Image (cartoon, rainbow, N blue to C red; front, top):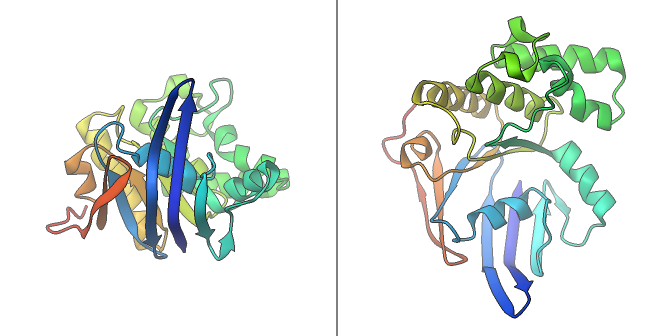
Length: 230
């Protein structure tokens, strides 16, 4: 499903040359549910940006769903992001003037999907996250947990190869966090591949595997024992 080999990423600002990733290699199989963890500055966010084709590596190889995406153009990477990757962010990133339904339709609009099909698929995605009764609401009319459900519906509507979630419970209370992790587990049980950055050990306990970063390197990679299943 997803494999990176010997990935190096440097940031240069003035006289400062910082290596965020130091020759990292990682393989994630189809159907895995993986947490990426580590302290601030460990490289986990940089890794997520590269896996999500939001940033480029300085060297190394990245194979996503059978395709080498290491040296693609910006336009080609944008196409990969839209077709192969579903994003869920801590800040939800919903457009305030659009309804819940219109927000979920957005990736399909970018992909040129006809309006009728967009509407049908968006309604199905919202039903899957339990928001069929909120389709005409706008983001400021729903709770934080509901906003994140909308974001998940938007992420899955194009049936991506992988769902990438960056601190998806970071802005939520405990009850809403558990509800979001239940949705992720259900999606994973249906075959979705999910990669999630989190700094919360109790949230990582809901996933199947933890990859831990420190100082730009992977220092631990293990199967989750005593996993919380919802």
